[in-house]
Length: 115
Length: 113
Picture 1 (cartoon, one colour):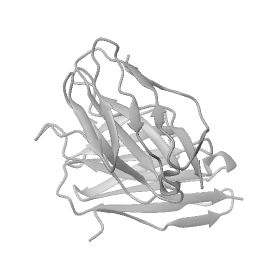
Picture 2: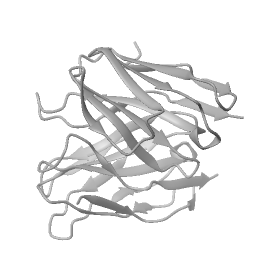
Picture 3: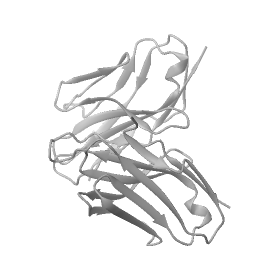
Picture 4: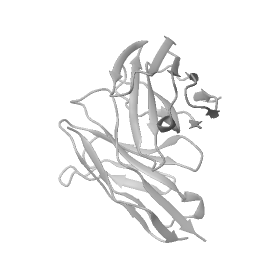
C-alpha cells in the first residue's frame, strides 16, 4: 500500500500550457503539503491544507492553485507554465496537531519539465 | 525565525568510513528535530527523529542526539555503505510556530566502493 501517491511521475509540457498534479494519502492524516525542489535539491514549501482548509500559502505565483476536495487529496493546478516552473514537486502529509506528531510523509515526486 | 544550517556538501567517503553530517538550528520555541533521506529519484523518507533534549534518534545504523546546549543534531554512522549514497536533510518543527517543517539545504553523500 502506497502511503502518499502522486500522479503523474513525469510531466513534460510546453510553455503556456496548463497542467495538474494529483496527490492522495491513505494514512488518515489531517494535513497535506506541496513542496517544490529545485535542481540544487533545495526544498521550498508552497501550500498546506488542514482538513481541506488552506493554512499555509507561501509566496508563490498565483498561477499555482491548490485544491483539496477532501482531506485525503490535495491537487496542484498550474496555469500558463513557464520555464522556471521546471522542478520536482512533492506532496506530503502529517498527522499534525491532533496527535502532536509533526513528521511528514512524502510522495515519490513529480518531475515537471517545461520546454 | 526558525532556521536549520547543514554542512555543505558534497561529501564523498569510502565504504566503511565514519560519517558525520553537522546540523545546527535556531528556533523560537522548543523544537522537534528530524533527519530525512532522499535516495536518487525518490521522495524524502523519515530517517530518525528526537523530540526533547538529550534524546537519541536511531535507525538503520544512523544516530543523532538532540543537544539543546549547542542547538545541534548531528547525524552519524559508524560504517557507511554504497547504498547510503543519498541526500540527507535536517529539519525541525517548532512548537511556537506554524504547522510546517523547516528544512536545511540538504547534504549530498556519495559512498565509493
